[in-house]
Image (cartoon, rainbow, N blue to C red; front, side):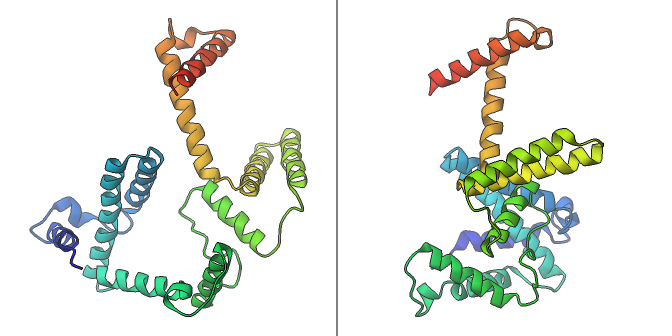
Length: 255
């Protein structure tokens, strides 16, 4: 199979980074593009959440642009190129799917995941702790989810959801009893981490759940702005509550 548009993209990036190309593109480094990589990935997730295929196609292109840009920067530094990136990925996918490309037999998805983790450990013998390899660049919420799953994978788990709920509530009590700002910050962090574990226990992606909550709140607040009959800063607490309920009902009626 030929992919002429992919080859054209690589050529375009090469031209943009050349002496006769674009000054902005030439100035970019791995470090300056870090935020772009994260933002483009999140925008692609937004398109997935919105079930918008046209938008997703565009955002995946922006993600691909970041990959090709980083590969071009490394090519210029004599480190690796986009072909090396693809080769490394191909080798990894084949190695971690022995049930497809080899003779390993699996019965279910869990066995596939168990094999994946086993092979991953074999590939990275330098990692001594189960906590090694967790990205430092991802959001704190996503990190908490990964840390929690890592701990559980070796048996560090609550016996049941009731005990987990007790832990969550105890963290709120400890927060209430905190005296200093540092203590409050520590205890609040413990609350968030405990709640992330509650999400994991219920097979909920905490990051996606919070994104949904953010989206829902913004939609309701925009509706309140539309329904408001005076400046929002002049509303009393009771009036805010009434406006919130009106906004919530309007949005529910639209569904």
